[in-house]
Image 1 (cartoon, rainbow over the protein chains, first blue to last red):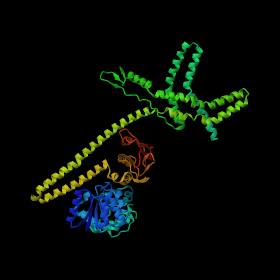
Image 2: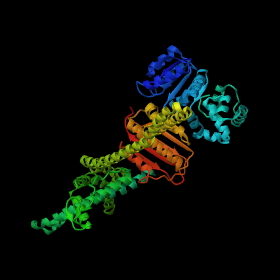
Image 3: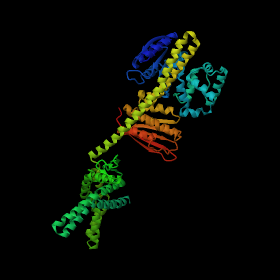
Image 4: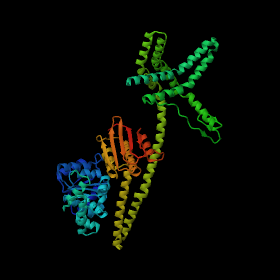
Length: 217
Length: 410
């Protein structure tokens, strides 16, 4: 894949480039500031980009702003936001124009390199990758936790993994249960929440997020 | 009907103002009367001393009366600005020191201090000046309605109906207005002089500075302890694991791999600890987005259903943003933990003078500002910016908190 890496700290940028190249991906451009990131996204239209939230010149949410601006110009442009902290607020902003091709992960998720590359590829393919920390916050926040009262513990964990963007197959590997058991749980929880079950993972994520009141749709 | 009521109220108030503002002149009038009655110029000194002493004793209670009348009638509160009593300390010699003199007993030291402060307070001159001015201004204007009534009574009693009717008309027409000059004059001349206000402000700031220094030192100690026991210790253990893994790489690759995995988990844990620590010092969202979005992010993370409304994005001085953020966090935590609320509403706005934050929850109320409690700490942190916290929390709820901090929106 052709990838853009936007990160202002040299050590992290260098490490990220090496990791991506070790997995056989091509880093077509790097950026160290918000405006550079936006220019790079416009110019290269990379298959996916890895973007840090906080960058110069203002040291505020430059990276996030650049990603949102680029996605307004090119709808569905895949971006994976990496940050030292995850906020529901930022997740909401990223997801308002659709969950396709959106990733939002903590920086330490690169420690699990296989899973990180997996998430990156999922985002590039138009899927979703949300950090478990932000999903946990979503599921336990005021409005959601009441709505989810009716779910069993197992159904809740399946819902959480689904919201992270995982497919049924990935969920069964994560929970050490059979794929048929996973599809049984998804059917029952979709039924309890009054949502339509759907096989494409992106639409499932959208359904879950819309149910949690996270997206506009 | 309402006009009649205001005339009656005005008449009563005029009489009260007349009495209060004429107390000191009455003492002098009595002195002069006695002096004239004695006729000998050499004995005038006695009534003069008597009147002066009476004035000194009267000014503070009369000024107090003026203040309480105004507060009751118009709601205008005039701060006294009198000098505060200092503290009395016991010395190793057994004597008591009150800042001016040594005394044998605590009671003597306090009595001495009280007298000194009472008689040397510059506020006495201000009170005296104010009462003198009140007597010839508000006192005279308040005398009009009673004088009208007296004229009316005299007129009718001595069958001069023109005088009677005129007196009555004057009394009724002037009643609603005659007492009113009392307020502006009292406010103008009875408020603390700039130097008194400044002295009070210095005391206030000294106390705040002490609070701020103590709080800052405690905060730095907490951060040091957290780093020392958390991240630093974990990095040491990380280094140990890596060193051991390096050694075992050739002899026992399987154990080395397990150690490397431990090291990775350790790194992830120290990162999440550092993240919590950073959040406690200065939440990253606050830095990246400012107060309003940071409060939105905070509201999303609480188990309460919380609505946040704000008049646009406000950017304030970072220290003020931080104090407000942690203040709101504290109140939300209280709403969850103590009030067991389900909903909370937060409104943030700028009213031209400063920032106003209103927080209301539907919990069981009964929140109190206790000396060592979180709310008292919040009030102290706000006081460093001249901010205030008002709390109304009846038993059974709801709790309403209002935070104001005077500041500009950047």
